[in-house]
Length: 333
Image: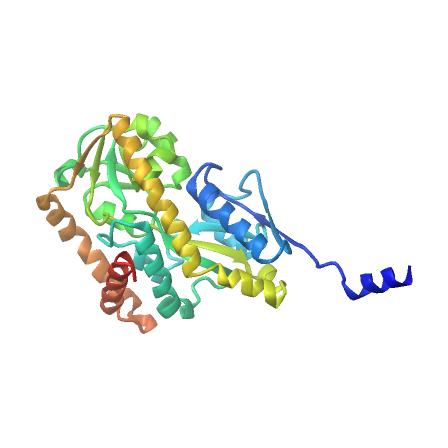
């Protein structure tokens, strides 16, 4: 008995931390099923079960309130779209500009590298532990009514957008932006509140919109993109053991960005098939239309260059480096 007691004293049971995770997209959406769940499993394995997650059955707050919910400990692990809180994030706009590329993986990995090198030090995410920043695949144009092949076709259309740079783009292109979370897209199109939507291919199928849309216009390189952050409550992370913190750090950053980017590329490919199978008429933006688009949206990126000068950053050089990094990742670098 004395020997058994001595062994128990020498090898105490490791404490377990359970973190509440929340997702505001459906359980089958790639961000829940193919990103959050696999990543949480990776963490549980890497920490030998000392860190576990409890996925809440329903998000306790709306998408725009998620950053503060994680910061304040309402939930411990979740994600948000930077553009859902206008004016709060400035530097993250760099991954929202047009014509960045056709792969979520290459854009996300390059974005994470730029974030680590240039953006993180400016602490726009103060109060949370950043697990990774990432982007969805290229954003395209979809309409419930008319085909979109020129600026004239976009004039006065009511377009649901997710906020951020695409909000400015939509207005510059002559349409009326309706800033709402993606979870409200179906209702807006079904009721006619919105005439169309700017979305990546994946999201059309994920939010069950194929039956509500008649036309799509794919923009090579993407008309726009969306900047996301996956995050953890900072106090909960700081309370973990050094070994468990190191395990989470090892699975964060570029590792996480590549995980989500690959998942989104697979989902975009499936979304493209579903859109066409549903009878949505899809065209590629013509060279003339691309010129029209560039003439309206390039000045918005250039205005951002001026906006970030106060932070001591050269916007033109930053975007040149970012685009070069995207090409590097796409080539296998």
